[in-house]
Length: 435
Ligand SMILES: Cc1ncc(COP(=O)(O)O)c(C=O)c1O
Image 1 (tube, protein in one colour):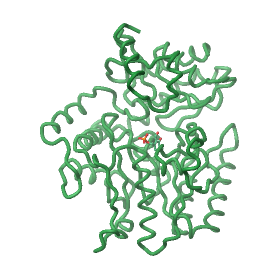
Image 2: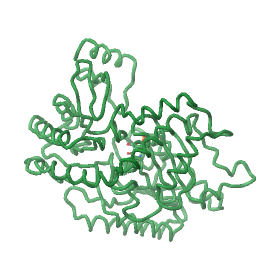
Image 3: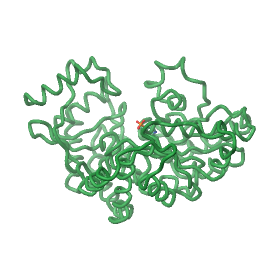
């Protein structure tokens, strides 16, 4: 690290409490200070570059310093940066709500904005409960969640998450929510059998306890933070039927899977379903600004529409519908349209599959799989602290990867070239040999 980079790292450790980090570990491995970023590359103060193969925590779709998003933000900044969305409205929020409704599965015409993914989860959970309660069904105060599911770190979102590392310290604060078998087969299990077992578990829970369950919350097709566990659309299709039959909402958390990650604009499309709540964030602004959104139906909206103020959804965040964030999101949707990104990604995904081929032959690689623009595999003989050791060895080789346990995954911005993807694979293989 240069003097500049080392100085920023040192000052950071003195003043910044970093997310998802045991700070003491930085005694041996300080954070990497980034001076600038362009396209899929991050540059440190010495001018070394690193391929951002995790899209800066799954948010960056079209590269850093994207000229089209930059221009949209600069223009918006001259017009209006932010006003509160209670009692006021503005063009970017209105147009974004309309365009999201047009893009999303049918029937999701009401957009409630917030800032981060976890806030979207909280909103969907609260809206679901409050909707039933407004309709006189006050007993529906639990949420069905999936084993290995992840929905964010706030108390409510953590309550429907099933990742022990994140939950355990806070267990006494969390309400007990029923956990259902995941439809994603793990450790070489049979995918069809896992999916059937998950559906049977869902059916059994709904048969017994639908009066208590407000909603089932799922990450459609890919359970991300739970280890990039993938499953077939059939689960979603049947889960939609079962939840509808039992008067239970379906919350589709597409915070990670949305905006083309799984190959379609939204993963739900692959099962031809419309959830009652669609949670969006991450890629929505192309990785520029925090923004999230919950889309819901007329039926939910109408349950809150009344003369009594308390029957309304009185939830708020100061930055709800921030105009700059909405402008970035509109620029992202324009890029999807103008560049026909979903069609281009179909071909890109099949090229990535071919380029990832050499990984299959590595003796430690197991379970290589792909869903759209996500590829993942497990590493045999990972050993203690594998994720940390692997990330740091990868960084030394010019790639940013953050394994989850022994699962290594690629989730780069869509704009990486074939040469850059081949570089990622080559450097991953070198890293595998080194850790
Ligand atoms: C599926 C899913 N839901 C919710 C979240 C939480 O989003 P945020 O980190 O923006 O709060 C994440 C973040 O990784 C996620 O992958």
